[in-house]
Image 1: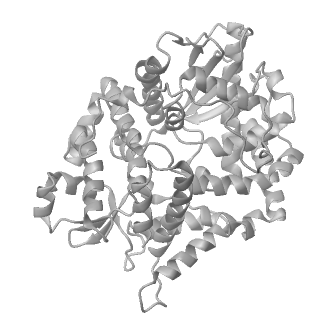
Image 2 (image 1 turned 90 degrees about the vertical axis):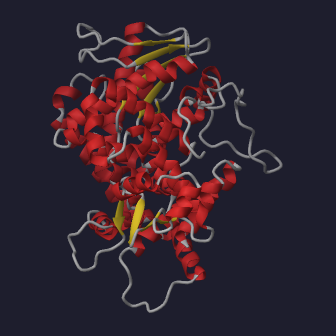
Image 3 (image 1 turned 45 degrees about the vertical axis):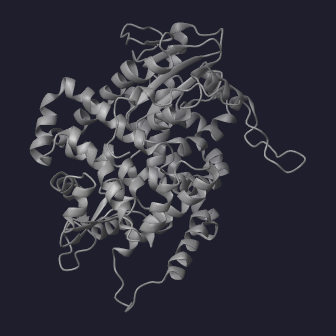
Length: 506
């Protein structure tokens, strides 16, 4: 029943955005119910019926009554956020001393308490809406990033072939092969049965390749006889045990790491095709970068270099072919004592865009439930990126046009940044850093999605307009929402920079 909801969402991801948001919320709730079901229930002697499954989804919809919105809890959470910020500054004193301002100067207990009720809304929205955008582009982008990594680390792909038994080209074809086969089973959405190999051949799918791909990215649902064995329930149980009760409903979607459930006897289930498409980089991070498993810094550096190269050689030449430049690091810069500036400068007729790339601003568990320690670390890293953008504004003396400070992360991070923006609105944060508007944070996936049908000039005009408008725009006299402040010009990139990567069966 849960897979049926997820697959209906996949079938409608190109439909009306408003309908998709509602459908996607159901998908995210269904995913957690599927994962919770891996615990089993010894008290049941019959299968659950659709009405019961729907009633459990309604429990998730009833979050406003959950303890996570309790005022006492939010007060305690606010104190933990501030204390963790102070702890970060103390532990990174050599870095912090070069900043123009310290986060502890403007993120106070009073401000956090005032805005902490919004944390619940952010958790809820992030939880419900995760996975928006073009899912196919995630796979295509990962292929391109792998090509970039291969140029400087050819040994990595050789080791991957030894482990997976597939070349990367064949490996990535299997994403769409699995989805094509999973939706071909009528009412049994997501069921992949290798005992029916004739039907696989009829669709042009090679059983050997698909089985290698799926077995590499699958786990049993539950192994009740061996507690320490790897299965979905041991992962979910560990996730729930490591956070306090109020955060437990927001536990991590493990299908983003392991998208297939092994059912035994050559049978597998793909419960959520969208999680499969989102998992593409996580799989590579796990299966390809294994030589650097013990060296996190080296591993992150490889991804960081690949993303910056991707922007410089693939994406920015598509959306700003004559107006962007790579900013060199100047260790002798007397204005910026740390010697660190942002990564890219884009000069448009109506604005400057300064881009600072951060590989990952949040850990997966922070992005799932926004716990205080993870949020504090996120705010510090977000501010560090803004400091680098500020240093670039001063070094280039950018005063004649609005400057859009854009922090690009590899992983999605729009929602957690909102509380940061709420808090700095009440301070002189922007003026202290020489900025005309608060920093904007987008993941690479989100930035490409939002510029698919907008030119960069049109997107910049929208961001400038949004920065000037009040946070909440009231409806008009007829009760209808106000029109979008800047209509899209339909002159976006349309993913032309990824057009060479045609995924089979799509």
